[in-house]
Structures are given as structure tokens and as C-alpha cells.
Image (cartoon, rainbow, N blue to C red; front, side, top):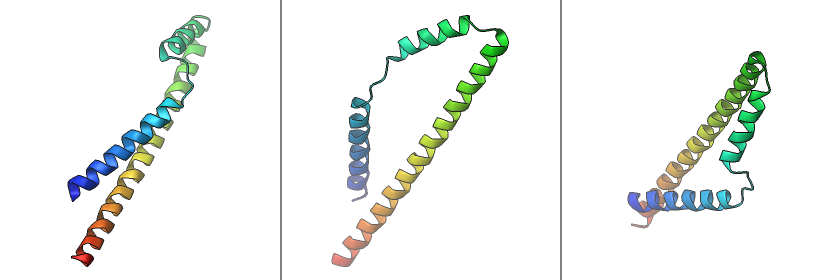
Length: 92
């Protein structure tokens, strides 16, 4: 039963991520990186440092958000597992 629940959660998360990724209209990373490097070449070292610190702060914030939602999904999955286990015990 545990393997079934784990597989179901994994498949759901994979499908949801694939659908989300297909709907993203983003420029390829290589093009963004190229434009970013071109921008940095026009800045003074002090300005480049500020931009770099800003980007690092954004990336860190995004990582924190991803971790929060991952943990929330994991918690929901474990709650679902316990609920299914309880239902199966009641009908057995």
C-alpha cells in the first residue's frame, strides 16, 4: 500500500510539473545569460556588485519558496497516506 501511495504522489507531482513547464513562455536561459553578461559589461564594478547581490537575494528567496511548497506537499502526502491507511483498517 505504501508503495502505491508513494508512486501515486510521485506520478502526480511529475505530471503537474510537466504541465506547468509546458505552459512557461520563457526565453531560453542561454539568451538571458548572454543579455545579462552584456549588461554587466556596461556597469561599473560597484554597480555590478549591487546587481549580483540583488540576483542572489532573488534566487535565495525563490529557493526558500520552493522548499516551503515541497515540504507542504510532502506533509499533505503523508496525511493522505495516513488517511488511506485508516480507511483500509476500518474496512478490513
